[in-house]
Structure formats: C-alpha cells, structure tokens
Image (cartoon, rainbow, N blue to C red; front, side):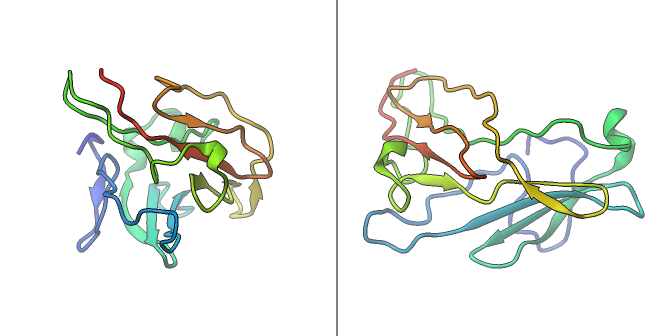
Length: 160
C-alpha cells in the first residue's frame, strides 16, 4: 500500500493505493458502480474512506488526524483520478472499459455524481471543471466535468 498511516478496518476489501481489477467489459455487459467517499469524522477528526461495489459504501479505514497539519481542521482541495501502470517497455493497459470518453456514457468509464461534503455533512455537486493531467492523450483521456459527471478511459497500448 502506498498510503503510510492509513488504518484499514478488519475485513475491508480495498484500501488507498490498491488496484481495482477489471470488473466487466462493455458494450453489452452490465454497468458496474464503484462508490468512493472520504469524510471527516466530526468526533475524532479522522478522515474516513468508504467504498462500495454496486452497493452503499462502507468504511474501509481511516487516516488519523494526527497525520496532518492542515487537514486536522479541514480540506481545502480535492483531487480524484485513475491510472494504469505497466513495466517499462511494455504496453500500457486499457483504462476503464478501454473505450475512449467520446464513446459516451455506457461505453466509456465515468465519474458520476461528484460532490463536495461540507463540515455539516451537506453535499453539493461539483459543477465546474477541474484542472487535469493526462500523460498520453493517444492512450487515455478525460472529458471536462459537466454537471458533476465526466467520462474517461482509453485503449492503452502506448509504450512507456
């Protein structure tokens, strides 16, 4: 795991830094939903990570507030993304379903219902696009955020 200090709860099926293995191939297959949520516990001040695969997310662990300086009070930025990796000199694997974002919803992988959660637990959708980094547009890409949604993915195949 690449997240020192993270405390994984007993029975958790995933933790930050883990690889989410392919779960389906589209078109034609059912659309799978992975839900991720990060929330600051009001009582302890710890940052909890929740995960759900086609169901309501449950806590998989937390980052103790003692790990942070600024995050001990509140978060001021958010980032999310996807990545693939391969050995140097090997083709980069597909991202998401392997379909490019211009393939549309139901073909390309997507981030949907992107939200900020405030200190009182109220959420609001992310409506504005965020800065993005794409290593190689020939292999993978992402659309701008539009009404709390965006599409991403690509066939891979590029050599690092």
